Image (cartoon, rainbow, N blue to C red):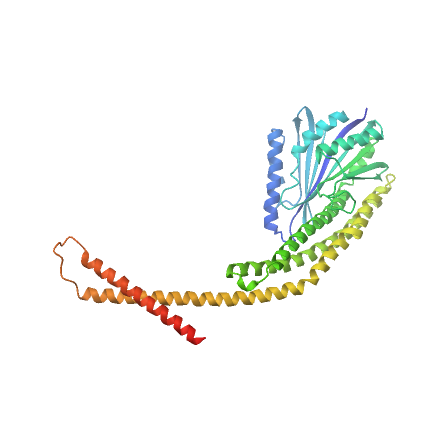
Amino acid sequence: MLEINAPNLYLFSYHLKEGLGISLESSQRNYHSVLEKIVGDISRLIPDAIAPDCQETFLAIQSQPTADLKFKGTLHNHTILGRYLRRSLHQTYALIFDGSVQERYNAHQIQSLLSTLKPLTPNPYSPDNLGQTWLISGVWEHGNSTQIEKLAEESYKTLISPEGWHHRATGDYVGVKLHEFWRTSGDNTGATIEGNSYLLLLLYPDREMFQAGWGFYEQWQQVLLSRHQIVWAHGQSQRLKQQLIDKYHQIEAIADYSHLSLYHLKTTRDALSGLITGFTTLESYFNWMEIHLENYEQYCHQLEQDADGLGLTDLTFLKQFSASVKQTYLPRLQGDINAFRSNLERIQHLTQMIQGQVEICQAQRDRTVKTAVAIAGVGVATGCIVAVASSMNPPVSSVNPGTNSGLSGVLLLSVICGGVASLVTFVALSLWQKLGK
C-alpha cells in the first residue's frame, strides 16, 4: 500500500492589488477581509492555535508588506503544523499555505487530512482573486505509479472538483517525477483554463530531497503567479467580449432612435460609451497577457537553472502552457480586438448622433419646464393680486360670526382667478409658438 511520510499540503493563492479597474483601497479592504476570515477560521477550528502578536502582524497589510502566521494544534485527530506566508509581489498579494503532519500516512488517511486542512485555506472566489494552485508533497516510502495516480485522482476530487480533472502533464524536478492536473471549460487544451483548478503532486524519495525541493518555493510562487495572471486575464477578456457583443446587438436592434425617450437616449448613449471603454479594456488585457507571458517564461527558465544541479529537472510541460497561450489565447483575443475595431467607427458615429438627440430633447424639455413655470407663475401672481384686492374690500359680516365664510370666499375667488389667468397664458403661449413656426 502507498505510504507517505510527513505529507504536506501547500496552496499558492494570489489576489490582485491594483490595476485593470481595481483600486488599491478596494483591494486592500477585500484582502484584509480574506485574512480576517483565515484567522477566524483557524481560531474557531483550533482554539489558541495562533499567538495574538502574530495575528496582529499578519493582519497589518499596510504597515507590514510581508508576514508569517504560524499555528499548530489537533483537528479531527490530526496533529497539524501550519503556516501562512503573506507576501507582496509587484501588483499582487501572494499567500502560501503550508499544512503538514509529521507522521506516516496511507492513501486513505491522506484524504482525511486534506479534508481537514481545506477549511483552513482561503475561499478561491473572494473578490480580486487571481487564482490558486494546490501542491501535495511528502516522502514516498511504499507504493507504485498506479497507486500514486489513484492518490492524485482522489486528492483532486477532495480539494477541487468531485468530477476530477480534464488534463494532466508530467515532468521532472530535482530528480523527482512531477505530476500536474487541471480543468478547462471544454475538452481540448485550447479551451479556457479554470483558474482555480491546478493541482501539483510531488513525492520525494527521501527527506533530504524534500527539503531541497521546498527551498525553491519563492521561484515556484513567481512561476505560478505569472501563469494565474495570464489565465485570469484570458478568462476576464472572454467574459468582457461576450458582454460587449450582447450590448452591441441590443443597440443595433433599435430600429428608430428618434422615438426614444430622453431617459432611453441617455441610457443608450452611456451603453455606447461603455462599449468604447470595454474595447480599451480588452486591449489592456491583451497587453497584460503579453507582459506576464514574458515573465512566465523567464521564471520557468530560472527555476530550471536553479534546480538542475540537484537532479534532473525538465519542466517542458510548463513551456507547453506558453505555447498554448501564443497559439490560442493571444491570437483569439487579437481577433476579438480586430473584429471590434472594425465596428468602432460605427459605434462612435452612433454615439455622436444620439448625443445630438439628447441635447435636442434636453433643450425641448427645458423649454417645456420654463413654460410650465411661467404659466404657474402667472396663475400664482394673479391669485395673490386678487387676494390682496379682496382683503382691502372685506365683505359684509355674516350673521353667524363663528363662521369663516368671508375668508373662504376670498380663497375661492383667488384660486378661480389664478386658474383662469394660467389658462389664458397657456393658450397665448401655444398660439405664439405656432405662429413662430
